[in-house]
Length: 181
Image 1 (cartoon, rainbow, N blue to C red):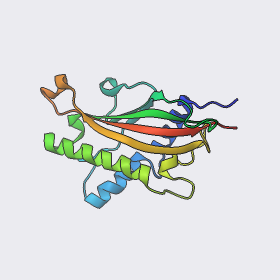
Image 2: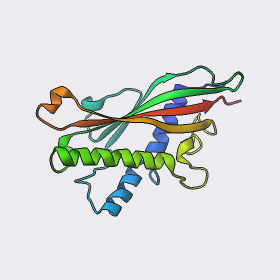
Image 3: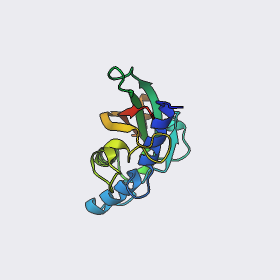
């Protein structure tokens, strides 16, 4: 039975983001080399969780949540394509990045750049960012028509900001899935 699946989309995003050879941490390692910075300035994402935005409730930071938000009706009559909205919520604590508020803001800009790069580039053959590596190896395989960053937004928690510059990068993704038929 075919499912359009919020679950399939979240799983495909997770597999793509956490891929050892071309995911977010691989891109951060490349970025650190190019910029001559260390993990003290731009740490790897320590934990990735799906379906629920733990954000500051996480036990490891930087922390990334992959959360299904919504979806749309079929895009065109009989197209069997649905757009799903997925949020990436990257929470970084001030103690994760050396320096003050400026260095923290710079690190968040670099995280945004790393995410954007992996979604735009061509990775190994058949592993394009804009298709989440052809939907990965799970139920979304061959069904992701398009994955694109719709918006990035830097968020601050007013209660936390009173004493520390903790930040969250919210990235809204559009994932267009086709029915498996």
